[in-house]
Image (spheres, rainbow, N blue to C red):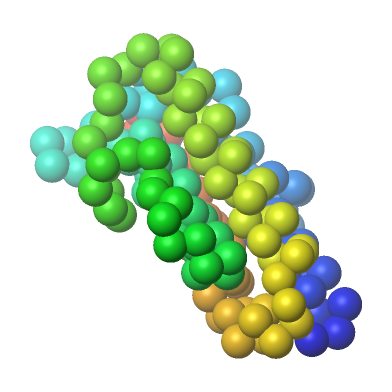
Length: 150
């Protein structure tokens, strides 16, 4: 895979999470300034909250990172998979989980940067898929913020 193609994948990943996206808020931007209680709020019983989406997105970034690096023994720092029990809403727990999301994003970028070209070519759909996953859940977060009154 030529360098421009790898750079495009890196850009897509970062535009959905951190940079200025043409589409509106990025995942990190949508989370900026939220308190633990706001992130913990659910619109109805049995529905996801913003915090759920943070852990869910971090988990899938970690999963893609593992598939790129072959790090089979690297477990996600929470018990379970896909959806996780939200911790009690303390500001410290919220900041810790935001750092978890940022850290898994950073590791994923590093893995894409360092992976052999043949692996990047084989996993390109997975890489841009996790970026679109971030964009999808960012939209849900924005809706939850509106429902909450933010």
